[in-house]
Amino acid sequence: MPILESPEVAVVDSPDGFSSGLPDFTTVSYKDAYSRINAIVIEGEQEAHDNYISIGTLIPEQAEELKKLARMELKHMRGFTACGKNLAVEPDMQFAKQFFSSLHGNFQEALKDGKLTTCFLIQAILIEAFAISAYHVYIRVADPFAKKITEGVVQDEYLHLNYGQEWLKANLENCKEELMEANKVNLPLIKSMLDQVAEDASVLHMDKEELMEEFMIAYQDSLTEMGLDNREIARMALAAVV
Ligand code: PL3
Ligand code: FE2
Ligand code: FE2
Image 1 (tube, rainbow, N blue to C red):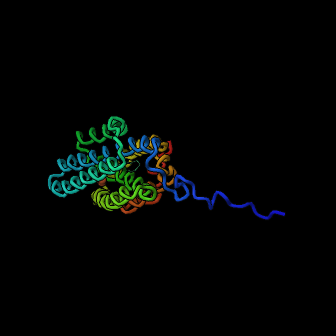
Image 2 (tube, rainbow, N blue to C red; image 1 turned 30 degrees about the vertical axis):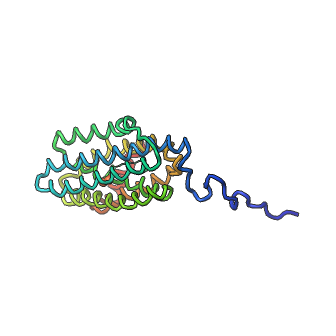
C-alpha cells in the first residue's frame, strides 16, 4: 500500500534551472520582458538625477549635496545600461518614458510651484522606496553580473531615501498637510505603475506580492522615522487602496 507519493517535482532539477528559482536569461520571453524593465530602471535613474538637480534649485544651500546624489543616479543608470548590454537586450526607452509620464508631470508641476515637500515625497520617498523594493526582489533572481551591480545600487538608494526623510522630518510641522495631499495624489500612481510592470516582472521571477511587501516596508519605515504616528501612516498607506 503506497503511503507517500514520490515528490518528483521537488527533487528533479528542471533543465531551465527553475528549481533554483533563477530564470533562463537567454530566452526570447526573458529578453522581451527585460527590454521594458531595464528601460524603466534606466529612465528612472535618469529622472532621479534630473529631479535631485531640480530640487537643488529650490534649496541653493543644499545644491552641492544634491548634486552628489544626482551623480550617484547617473552611475546607477550606467550600471543598469551595462546590465542590458550584457544580456544583449535593447531597452525600450519610449515605453519607459510613458511609464513615468504621470509622476514626471506631477513632479514638474510641484517644482514650478516651489512645492519642495511634494518634490521630496515624489522623488526621495515614493520613487526611492519603489526602487529599493524592486532592487531587493531583483537581486534574488538576477544574473550574476546584474546582481553585483544592483547590490551596490540599493545601498545608495537608502541614502537618497534618508536624505529626503530627514528634510521632511526637520520640516514636518509645516509640511504635514502638503505631505498628506501629495501622497494622496501620487501613491496611487506608484500602485498603478507596479500593476503595469507586474507581468513583465513575473517573467523575471519577481513576485508582485513580494514587491508590494518590500515597498510597504521601506515606505512605512521612512514615515515612522519622519515622526508620523501609526494612524497617520495607516491613513497614508490606504491611499494605495483605491
Ligand atoms: C532612483 O534612484 C531610481 C528610480 C528607479 C525606479 C525603478 C522602479 C523599478 C520597477 C521595476 C521592477 C524591476 C526591477 C528590476 C531591476 C533591473
Ligand atoms: Fe538610483
Ligand atoms: Fe536614488
